[in-house]
Image (cartoon, rainbow, N blue to C red):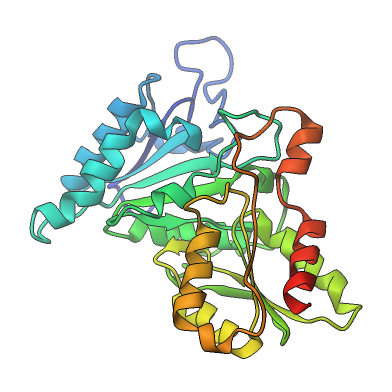
Length: 317
């Protein structure tokens, strides 16, 4: 925002405090991620919106089409249904419908996923749904370092980017450089390297998969752990290269299984690396059910390190 005056932020409660006694920066987003911005950039660039997602997402699409670079906070991804048409039927299709002459450099940020006991209407992942729509770029970081580099890439991108932030990871820390840096879309990260099994995981599943793989190392089992970082574009080459080397694949995601990313990547491997497979492809994901509210039920619902370990051992068996 300091270097590009066309970048602005809007959403519900991104600044807060206007017209009230007390601090003129009361909220800074549902998770405090925008705290302090309104003091530096003012309310013309840090814009609190009414609770009308269809209106302010539509406004972002219009602003992007005319040359601005909006960043929009939708708070919880579960609210995407209210503005679905504006995203997948308008913003995603601008470039295609206008013969490549239009662009839509908008970033929409969501908190996503379970782990907060926020029940069925505030705990969905949803990135697997949005990945299916052409014209949208979809980002799912698994740590703070990647989140910064991917967000800076998203702001510079000329296409609409949906930026899914697993809310449970807001509590995690990582070393993040002060300077500006970008991480290219479509470039997976090898979090662990091994010879026996390829494990692909998304978002908050990445640290859980890493914990399972680290524990299995004591038993002499070594695994590649691939964090795709973006689901559209997807680094198919990295996944297939690893599967061809290990001959085994486990895919881990917190979303339900039907028409999801675990099935998509399992299909990719079966189609393009079938002759290399030495065992069954295993999918580790949530049940085909809404996310439960009860902390105990939610803990059973979301995949954990034990379930990942069992899947790795099953494909080796």
